[in-house]
Image (tube, rainbow, N blue to C red):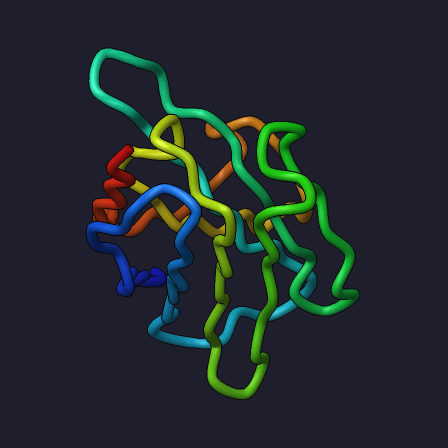
Length: 123
């Protein structure tokens, strides 16, 4: 079992930046991916970005390309999401997740989830 704890959410004005962190409780064996999803009120959970923790390869949703950057620290078992040029439509609860099968974009492919952290972007 892997516990994930997100942090770094908050309230920011449009055009501002936030950095989210996702700390895993333990290192997992083999190749795995850490991803970020978000869910706005009344909407389905959507994929934001994922990173293959060993290879460092990434996959971004089109809506965040050029604005968001994912990174990871293998030793600290932590993934980071740097969010720049934030827009009101980025407002959502952001969830961190781990997929033991590698990079994926479907929420159903992910095995472990954090509780989420609220990001609110005011106009």
